[in-house]
Structure formats: C-alpha cells, structure tokens
Length: 449
Ligand SMILES: Cc1ncc(COP(=O)(O)O)c(C=O)c1O
Image (tube, rainbow, N blue to C red; front, side):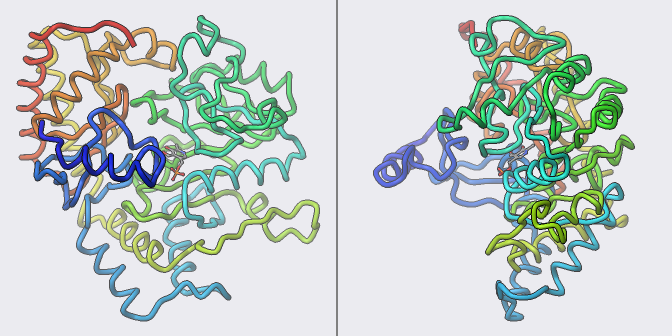
C-alpha cells in the first residue's frame, strides 16, 4: 500500500494538532488521508480509489456529495440564508415537521449540532424531570464524548475485573481522563440484553435515565433479544426513570425514523444525528412534549437550557431537509434498495467465509453490518470480547483496504452501505473478500486482542 503522502500529511499535522487529526477516533492503522469522495467512492491523497463502507462513521446514507443535497445547500447560501442568531426561521420549522412525521413516538424536537450534544441534553432533561442524578448505560455502547457517558465502550477484560457480570454493574472504565469523581459515581454500565441488571441497578440507585443504543452499533452490530427493549420500557415505568433511546447511529439507517419505530417501542426521549443529514453536522433530541417542554418551563428550577450559537445553522438544516425528503420518497425506495444491496453483500461474504473454512458470523441490521470472526452473533460485549478473533479481523480489514475496499481498520467496527452503492460495487467487494481471505489464511496468524 502506498501511504507516502498520507504519512507525510499526518506528520505535518502532528506539529500543530495533537495526534495530527481533529478527532482521535479517526486514527487507525493504516492511517489514510483522504482527498475526495463521491457517491460510494473515496480517493486518498496518494491517488488510490476505494469503495467506502466506513461512511464517515455511518452518516452517509445517500453517499458522499449527494447532488440533490449539495444543490439544496448551495441554494440556501445563494438565497442569502444566514445564521441570524435571532428569532425563528422558516427552515427550522420545516425540518422539525419533516422529522416528526418520520418519528411518531416524538411530539417535539430540538436540533443541536452533534450527537454528543443531543445525548447530553437528553440526560439533562431526564435529570430535571426526575430530580434524580444516576445514569445507566450499556457496556459496549457509545453515547458521546461528554462526562455523563464517556465510559465502558470497548473495555478490556482487565478493566472489567476479569469476568462477565450478569445481573449487576461492571466496574467503571472511563474512556477519558478528567471526569470528576462526583460525576463518575453517577455513571453505571451493565451488559446489553440483561434486564435483571437494569432492575438491580434501578433498585440500588435513584436513576434519572437509562440511555442505550437500541442496537449496539459501535461494536459491530449487537441486536436486542426479543422482548429486551420492551422490558426496558417496562422497567422505566416501574422505577420512574426515563428511557432514552440513542438513535444517533441507528436512526434512519434501517428505515425512516428510529429503529424503535420499526420495533414499536416507545422511548421517553430519543436522540438522532448522522444519517438525518447525510454527513452534515446536525443532531436532534426528540420526545414527548411534557419532557421537551422543560426547555420553556415557567418554573425556573425545572427549566432546561437548550441553546447554541449554531443550533439550526442554515447549511446543515438545508442538508437535513434535502436528506429526509429523499429518504421519505417512496419513488426512490431508498430502504428497499439498501436492503437488496446489503442482503447481496451478506450472502456473498457468508458464502466465501464458509468456502474458505473461516469461523464467522455476518450480522446485519438493514445496511449496517459487521463480519465477526466467531461462531454465533454476540448478544453482549463480553461475548464479543471473548469470542471474536480481533487480530484476524484487523488483518482482514487491512487486506480489504489494500484491495480498495475501505472498512475502518479497527476490529469489530460496523460497516455501512449507502444508496449510492451499486450492485457492481457489492460484487467487486465480494471478489475482493475472496482474495483478502485467501491472503490472511495463508500468512501466519497472530493470536490475541
Ligand atoms: C450512538 C451514538 N451516540 C452518540 C454519538 C456521538 O455523536 P457525535 O460524534 O456526533 O458527537 C455517537 C457517535 O458515534 C453514536 O454512535
């Protein structure tokens, strides 16, 4: 792989940016610098072309530089839209109405800039409503970069005390330094699909909220067992905490609206980002009016501040309106197309894994997918951590990248297919899988995580 210019650029940026890039999560091995993207394709600074399945950590549901979306953005600028910072705008109202038409479990919505802001605001609303402080989340879930949730994602066995914990919480494993002890004491993480643990924690602490992705899509694709999300709803009602479904990654991925809309589960609040604007920076906090209206409560001690200089900036708003219109258009059949392409990839990769005698399980939720090197789909983080061959996965991803297929080179990361992918892209990807698997199976395997 020729990474000459990528490496030079990283070194040059490192002189002025810690780590050389703006979001440390973008650093992986190989660390490729991209120069351009269109549709399903990206080109790196050394000139190599890739079919992209990383999709910028999943927002690109229509594909890179969607022409209709770009036109909407350019029109908004040419028509003199600005971020006036005073009063309402026609466009934010239009976006809110479009969004709520897609998410029937919500009565009101507020837009912010990032998924992290949305989850922080959701937790603040939950705390204001309940008067409680403790937050419950999932081991292996990611809900943003802020103090209230920045823990227990891809934790090691040592961090978790060396054993799986069912029916109770894991030790705290922060993913950042700088969280005050008082805040650390309020954060609890349990295994996904473990209702008994949720009940136990809710009995032990006064919970403001349980926040979880409905499908864990930051550690591949870990699906809820039948009845699990319904069980969370029941426990929230029983114990009086709010159920926040974090749909930042799952929202609008498998269908219009949240994953919870497909499953008929009703959260109190839900958070969205990524696919709602196909790569432009905007996110949403949505929910029942009685919670959302805390932002305008006439009781000052209940009022939640939801404010931001760039909330509903006209560029991402135009992008989101254009994106939602396309996603909702029955003539385009975005989700039908995604389903057909994704099923083709699943079938092709699964067949090749079997042909090559590789122990693997391809898990897919709509266009979100992950090939795990283990015999069955994991149902929680510990199963993944114990069963998945992380080293083989990394070698597999590197081998695909060398063949022009860009799956993010960190083991167990989820891939995404966009509406811009073609059947030919999928067939090329399957072909590349064949030779990638041949390569990794004939060169020596390193063992370990
Ligand atoms: C489920 C989930 N919640 C929240 C976030 C945070 O979003 P952002 O990176 O836009 O702050 C992410 C980001 O990957 C996410 O996947």
